[in-house]
Length: 242
Image (tube, rainbow, N blue to C red; front, side, top):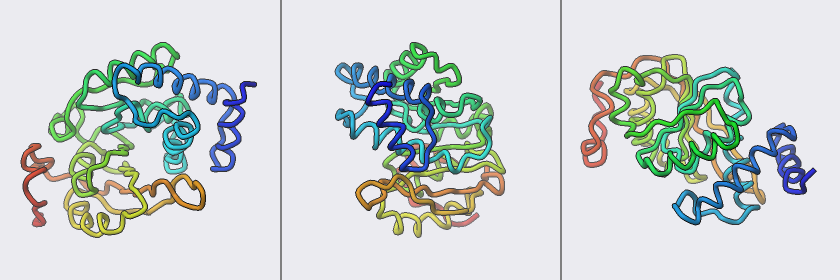
């Protein structure tokens, strides 16, 4: 067995993530191809293999503990280089994973690599979350909506909760200094139909967690006036009246 594959499996065990050899081979192959394409189009700033394994592959897979149905329908908002969507698709072969991004070139590269590796349970979706959230084909159609985007939690909730079906969950991966964002997002999450179910620890590295996972349960439909158009979301404060 390749040493890198052995290492990924071992690190997975330390993180309480069970990765078999076939899955590990595919995860490493995805890393290799992505880093090669990254020389021509900016898909990731993490180019060191050890860092990539930890901060992209394993960090993405910490979401597995919160995804109970292996046949779930997942939407990865702002996927970039395919994270966390591609690692989840590799591990959950029966899941239906949609990778959404506003940059078409990135989606084309990710789709090409996935096709080359035989990752057949993914599709790509080009567009903005605030527009797709008003599209009946996508509004409240996904069991699990994920995001590792850098936007604050209030913005992310308005992007992601309209796409989450009632009974589903929005999983937001945030940095260790998340509490202020969480406090500010409490009322918007409620208005948008969500309820914070739990705050989970993500990947532990050198005694510190890379991310926390904010698990938001969708308990009621999102009001029709959300999400607002892009300029309104960016410029105006969230309206707190229901």
